[in-house]
Image (cartoon, rainbow, N blue to C red; front, side, top):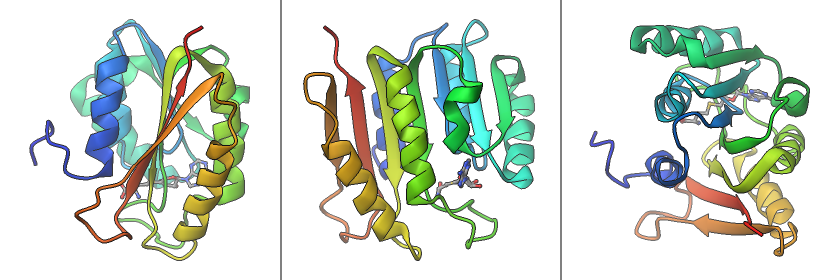
Length: 191
Ligand code: SAH
């Protein structure tokens, strides 16, 4: 697939991240899964940057580690074997960006999914660490049990963020069914 296209939520999130993230930046991937977003972030920040990448499934961390090693990007990534609800315990520095790609591990156990309480706990910590101009992208999936409820909970939480401090956007591809994955975008405002 053409990685420059806007075909789907993940590539739209990359479009925004690429605009904002620079070499040397500190960023996080809250749900590394198979490591595609982690690798994308690692290539944006380069060797002088840093990516914290969370997952609580060993299979996901192993897949991500292998992908990063193949690309020679392991050096700038700290793989965190923990639930992202402990985000701020591990990420000790202000962040330029954080990526949340919700749902289940593609190719893995589809019953192990992100959960609204944990997702919102992690998002709350991540927004608190964003520097002005920093971005959070959330890819939301509604096609699995609980996905719709998670999307609603995340939207409700994000809609309540104070607009003096955060700019919050929702992007849906409206020529697809309403169940298609979509993107929530949070920017920490510049003063
Ligand atoms: N659905 C996406 C991929 C999402 S992967 C796609 O199709 O591209 C989501 C990852 O989040 C999974 O690997 C899962 O193990 C991880 N995850 C779920 N809950 C988590 C939590 N509380 N902390 C960290 N990772 C979590």
